[in-house]
Length: 150
Image (cartoon, rainbow, N blue to C red; front, side):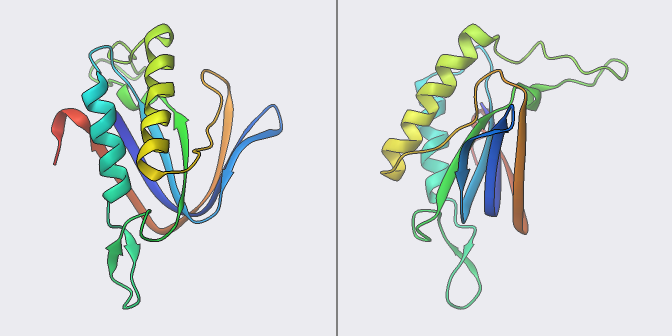
């Protein structure tokens, strides 16, 4: 499982001109899955995102998590995180989980996030053509991979 987490002042996702999810201060999480992802990957990632200390404390130091900062989280599925560009200029998506595997993984991941954060997590629409709008705060952008747990 791969995630790109962006600290945002606000973010929203639209499908066909309709807002499907929006947040104020918090994390925009772009999540991609591969066929071998399991519950342990989802749990680890949800816990890591909840504890990631990338929000400023009173002294201006990145020392607080999204939970500590009372921030929100917006989750968007993104299979392109598993793009391979080894051959030529057209990316291959062969490592990404196919939709019939990825959608249940994404839905379970959102449930893990909600359980970990103790609040509802808005999302985009799986498989839809989405427009993601964000105001990146910092900017702070962190890439995480459950296979390279750090």
